[in-house]
Image 1 (cartoon, one colour):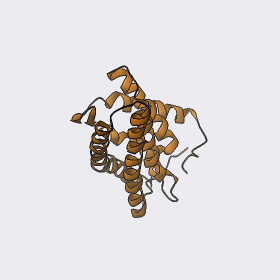
Image 2 (cartoon, rainbow, N blue to C red):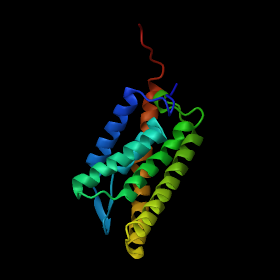
Image 3 (tube, rainbow, N blue to C red):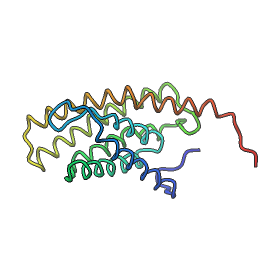
Image 4 (cartoon, rainbow, N blue to C red):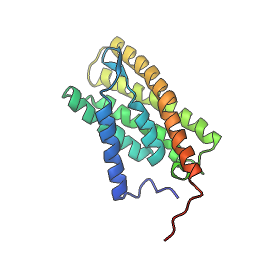
Length: 186
């Protein structure tokens, strides 16, 4: 049985810390594709932490991880984009709420895969729309620059999600499915 979203334990806090540290430490790795925009493999971590631990853990890990990365790489936090990372992970974590979905026990049906893809795609574009509007209306960034960033980041994040994030979650589920007949003797 998967843990409730709202029942927090030491494990939940540690998971958030690990997720944030991993995302923050690996987000600097990327290929520049537009002004201040990169194709970042770390986006796959948002899919993994969201699907395996739920939208709340995913949101917090993505948000804190992005803040860590911003502070390490340029010393300034871009709050709209940090919130966007959290939103992306939260959307991807919606699959955690699906009936009969349990990655830890290897339970993921074809309709779960389809919904995970839908949640991921919608989450990527909702979060980038939020981040873009935040930069335009709060940070005063030029519209044309933000439009290029949002479209470029959207396509890059979509590719990373589909090429790295989705297969990683599927592999984790398959691994746990094959181990589901094991028991622990006490």
